[in-house]
Length: 204
Image 1: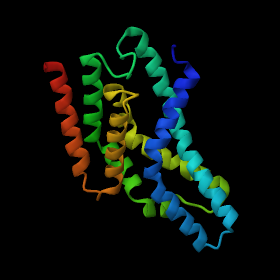
Image 2 (image 1 turned 45 degrees about the horizontal axis):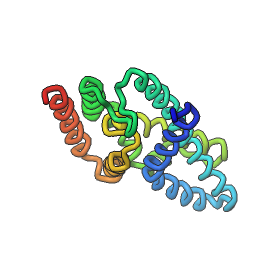
Image 3 (image 1 turned 30 degrees about the horizontal axis):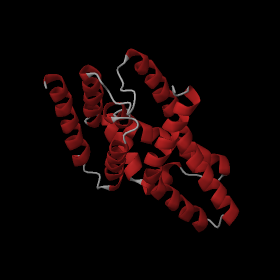
Image 4 (image 1 turned 45 degrees about the vertical axis):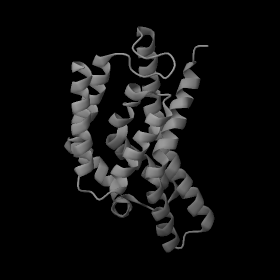
């Protein structure tokens, strides 16, 4: 049975929620502590944290819409396998790998990743205590996270959208980038490996 657009969109968004929520958890916990320090009522703390997460996940919903559209564009052409939904095309795989690899070396990647790696600084610069402000904070952080990890998420088309091992590997990579010291070594090393993989996929 062919997968429908709503089901594909739901699949992508659930996948993004599972993969990206661990990365925003330190920000949420720190935000709760900041609100408690300002003697905000408990119910408002819970509501603000929920709004922060909602704003963050809304950005990944937008990404999921785009990814679903790309999936439905690629499937009829036979570029994706019918079962695991991974790339059957060496050119498509190489293009996605090279794009993600080069992006790992870009200043935009470094700037966005820095915002994700320093939740205390992010809150100090952007946080307010109002409930609408919490939603805006989540949207803002979600945009930075998308700028940091979006190209890596597109690699799901290379390793397989339904490939649980590949999903787990990308999740671990994203989490390591955010939690390891901000030296840039992880991103540059990953970028180099992805570029090498792109070249190898065309040669082999």
